[in-house]
Image (cartoon, rainbow, N blue to C red):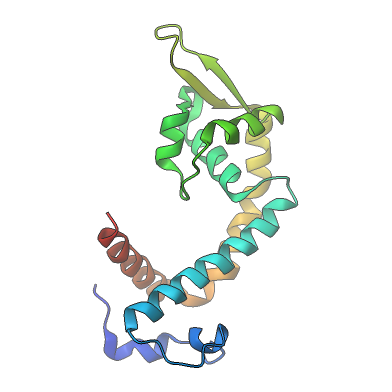
Length: 170
């Protein structure tokens, strides 16, 4: 299912503000691609800010939350720092320091592997699992509040458009 540009206007809520108005830009964008990229960046920044605020109440940053979710998904097997870094939503140049902070809080633990002492594996602890479990419903509610009003059809279209844009960045 591709994007049908002729139906574009039905997807814009009446309360939406153009990115040009939102950033108080007086001149129109010279290219549609410029406007789209600024709108995407502004939207990502707003959503990230709202998520950061919600997670701050639990003593987490979005990158720490992301790392904990990666480790929850890894189960007892755990992950090396390099594997965590590969799976992160936002790149963090210092995963080791990020894991250090989580370890100091007792949310993760690290161990050297017996078969290769050079490999350090990070695993989520019971406290880390408990924290994530306490966040599951608030995160689900957050996601629904932020993007639910788009509806299923628009969300699927948004996902496809973002996948197509990301494919150009690889």
